[in-house]
Amino acid sequence: MKLNRFYIISLFAAGLLLSTSCSDSFLEKNSLTESSSGNFWQTEDDATMALVACYDGLQSNQLYGGGPWDLGQINLECISDNGGHFNWSGWMEGYDIANGTHSASSWAVGSYWDALYEVIKRCNLLISNIDRVAMSEQKIAQYKAEAIVLRALMYTHLTMTYNDVPYLTEPLTISNAEAPGTPRAEIVAAEISNLKAAAQALPATADLGRVTRGACYALLGRLALYNKMWDEAISAYREVMKLGYSLDPSYATLFTQAGQASPEVIFSVRFEGPGKSEGTQFNAHWNTPLEALNGTLNLADDYYRLDGTRATEHDYADKLANGGLDVSLPHIAYWEGRDPRLYTTLFVPGMYWNGVGGADHPYGGASASLSTIYVMKYFDPADVSDSWDNGQDFYVVRYAEVLLSLAEALIEKGGYNATEVTGLVDQVRQRVGMPTVASVEGANLSKDQLLDVVRHERRVELAFEGLRLYDEYRWHILDKSIDAINQERITYGLAYETRIYNGERDYKWPIPTDEIDSNPKLHQHDGW
Image (cartoon, rainbow, N blue to C red; front, side, top):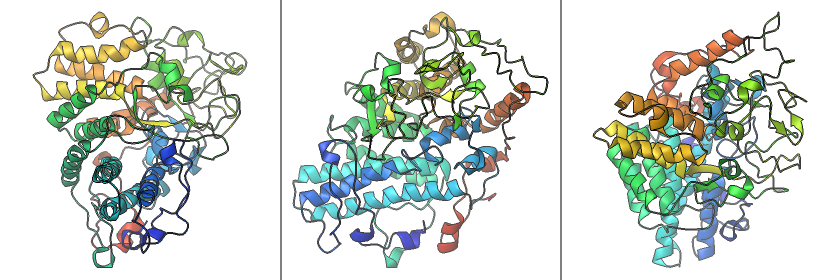
């Protein structure tokens, strides 16, 4: 996307002229096939279709929709230490970023930027024009607030990857087509202020897939947490906790279509399902979970035994003479009696998928996983359709994240009540039958020890939900994560590519080459 080209548009060329297959009545709208800037922004139906277009942008292949070869929030996990390998190798987006060989011209670097600014563009068009529509002031305020929240979510992604980027809050025109980069801190401060104001115009409940007051506060808290604004994060998360959300009693059911209306889901990207070509990243399967993406042994090892202790000694040391795991040995015993979230998140030896896997096919999938582990989350074993399009929603934020994020913010701020902090973590642990912090790690933990507890819990609870890479960036542990993947490759003879750590440069993605070439006000980051 070229900013000075892409934003000089009428409504007809704005990307609003599209059909959508989102599933509730609000989202079931026809395309704007006959609309233009001259006759649009008049009726409530115009405004609704424009808002639908903002939501529709979230279904981009590079964001929350598409296939496993596209970047998306799921493939971001494979850039982190949760995903050891892009099993379909170099033609999958993000492969070079994971290996530290990317450049400003890389496919994922440009496509992710384009997808994020596409949603921002649509949101800015609505925010700037909706006051022209003949509808109630209350509904205008709500629609505008929804667009503000979606825009803030996009700037969260942009500031966590590219850092300093053009901060666009209105449609670009010929007179202001060239936008300079804005410091990350300024963008974050402005968006937090916008989110606070937007929350007041949003309802506590709405149709699935629409932004609510809870979603606004939860995403405000996330943006604040990511930028070490502890008081802002704590305040926002406490507001979420007043709104009646709760943890789903079944972690396994939560990540199926039966769990989409759970009181734990605060905001999701909606997909309608079969026949609509609108499935999520993880719905392409061949009677087993998709083999394109692998989990890591490093992640699998972090799912503790049921007594809360780490499974430290496993039998991966059994190798073939020429290296690699002995696939004649399922190594099933090691995987038994573990944190139940392991079996919802990862497909490991000993598990079955509609009769396939386990001893019949120890490592599952149509292509052998290099780590012996596939991704299970968002697959429904009850779905035997062998479909690429099962309609599973993608959960952008859920209540478990709020609890763990609040715990982290309280610890980082200091002066915390340790009982409150461990209580937040215990809620998440005990939902799946895992023991409390006090019974495993003990009482009177130091600040660093408590942070380790929260970080561990965050990893196993939220794995493959698109958050781990950002956690690595904000905790500044990318070098340790890369070392862990490389050590796994060496120790077990796995055919991973060697990952390269390029120092501080790797915490900031380069501005895409096309953007630099087309916008003289935009300058490349140092080191790129």
